[in-house]
Image (cartoon, rainbow, N blue to C red; front, side, top):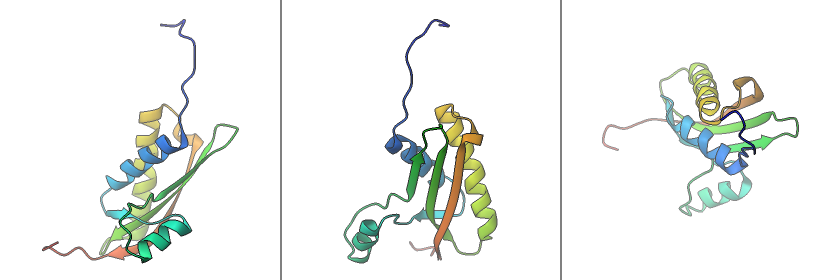
Length: 120
């Protein structure tokens, strides 16, 4: 297998989906928030669309910069949940893509805090 030729290309959409799914698996994250103006308008008008929640840019030098927009659970320390998101999501992204964690710059934007009700 040492003579394999070719390359693997990761699309922005695939990278965003990996980041999105990894983020939703972090304890304390209740959902993702809209990224773009169009998503915010759709949300305000109650048009049923799932917010992307992730904006990722792949730079020519191979580094990746991503911003994740989240909603968190009430009662948890925001800074701890944000650090956990960065740590776990970077690890999951690196393990799934083979791209080193040092090449991924991750920003977390907390849009809101939600109170979870037992009957919901």
